[in-house]
Image 1 (cartoon, rainbow, N blue to C red):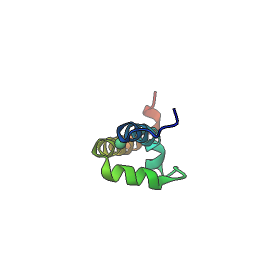
Image 2 (image 1 turned 90 degrees about the vertical axis):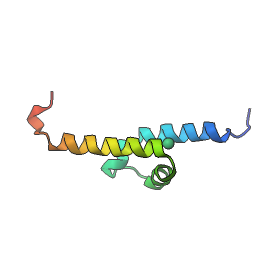
Image 3 (image 1 turned 60 degrees about the horizontal axis):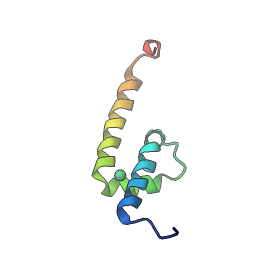
Image 4 (image 1 turned 120 degrees about the horizontal axis):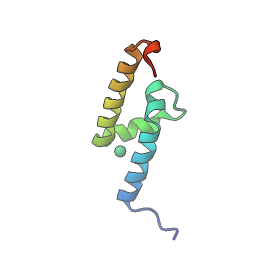
Length: 69
Ligand SMILES: [Zn+2]
């Protein structure tokens, strides 16, 4: 029961954490951004997601506030 998670399971857990905090990270509001940065450096799928999200966030910010539903 107390065995450490196998690397793949640990990786998945880290991915989930990273993705959950991505928008805060991109806003610079994450208290501990280093873990996210390190994960993004070696996890291509989370990195791609971060890039896409950054692009989306940048696009949303260009929209006038009045166009929000
Ligand atoms: Zn990941």
